[in-house]
Image (tube, rainbow, N blue to C red; front, top):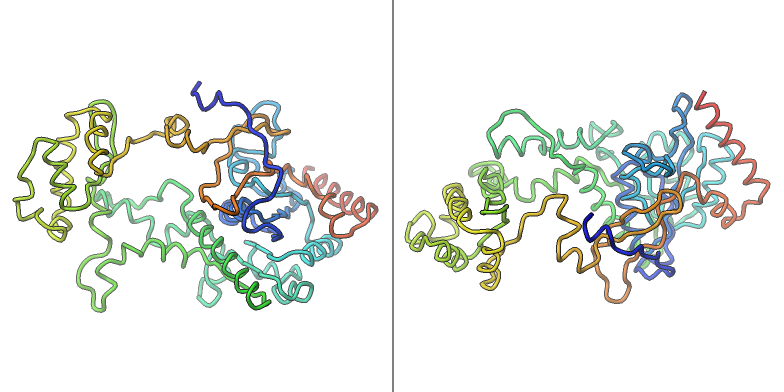
Length: 429
């Protein structure tokens, strides 16, 4: 067992300290795109109310956010608290409401009337059908910030089409990146839920910018965050490259990044991430490696020349790094400010000295899932620190609590809960 896993169980923070303290977000998003974004907003202090639907007919009882269910859940843990859900749904309260029923829609509108932000990744046509368009919501809360997570922008021919991470990686060019790098013509997806998470970061900035506008003017607005446009913008920051000009002056993609020799380099006992950047750093590296005079070669004498001949330059490195251990290289390079780091595998992360020192892996005892790790909010605010206050919720765990807050009576709440129970029972038949 790693030392990280032997750490004492921490306690949830008791106070809201983040910069979004006092902001209430009604969250209709699910899966990863929206859930990843709203967790960040919750870490920043927002009161995030995650509205989830009961299982649809034929759904086998798997209601709520679909990411509740995949994974190897520990014996005795609640079956609706899967590993990905646990990782991206803390600092939220779960409310179970069937929006297809008039009583459910009415309850949601009462919650929205108390909110600052409504977030949704339900297709906008379906939101309109439910009577939850921006105009419908604005009638209840005139200064609402309504942020819609879409697959594609509403003014293009793909508007309204379903979108998932795989589709957006395919449509944005991301699925070609590995082929450009290694010459294998088979397109492949980047093996992380990249499109959802990148779009989620755009989503966070959209929410905070719209709230800042409202703070200055009192005006809410409708905000659309389309995945295809967000991810394409992200990729082309460097990979538009020579095609940014009209006409193009050369290739697509930044050659230093798509160079197949750009990778961690093998050492005597592992691998090292290594990137001398300035002329002086390269010169020092080659001197330390016992290869002085490399920069006398005109292919490498200047930054522009190195960029044009980057593959040949990188190809030299591994021949040299294999001569020493990772620790020996770090001892040589770090005092000379040459960028280098030990390559971690996933299994190394919880023992990484830096991540341990900053308390990145925080161990908690979930009342329904047992011991688990939460990842510390990475952004540090000197005056308004982000924190972790709530465990990821069971499905509908705070339904009655939230509905009481917005003025529903116990009888009205009981009637709603009977409706949800009947829907779940029908779904499992």
